[in-house]
Amino acid sequence: MKRKAETYNEAVYAVVHGSGVPIKQLAARAGIAESTLYNCANPNMEEPALARKHIIPLTLATRNFEILDFFEEQCGRVAYELPAADCPLSEIAKEVSTVTRKFGVLLLRVSQALENDGRVDGEELAGIRAAGTALHRGLARLLAVAEREANG
Image 1: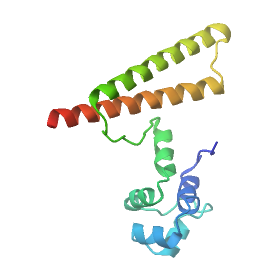
Image 2: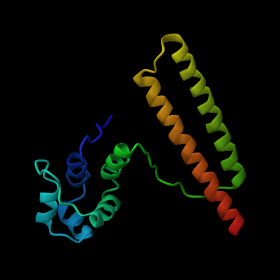
Image 3: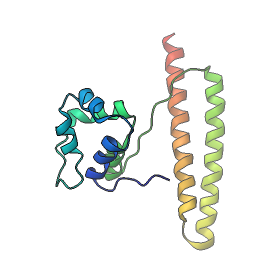
Image 4: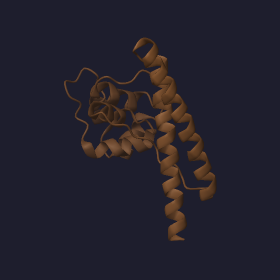
């Protein structure tokens, strides 16, 4: 499993150096000089000089969300990519029903774990996060399809 960036500097470094996209291409996409981008991604800088306006182009060019993930983590929030509304509403509703049922079972197991030893271990927590993300994605997809159906 990939280690999460613990600092903003680490997140910027990971996007610039760990995405497999050439620095020259990233700099052009962000509209800054290569040397500026290298300096922004220097992990020894006290605060990277990456302007807010550069974060979105870099994220889109690399499909690396570490900077955004860092901000979300620091703010106690999560985000996920919105799915495309590409199937009938009835199929999405069935999928969300299944995801919701699985999430309920997982919550029951966590509740049982708490009853047994008063804690949730790392493996159980990872399962909770995965189920919650799946549920959110399913609901987002359901809403997108419902909106598409309503707008015709």
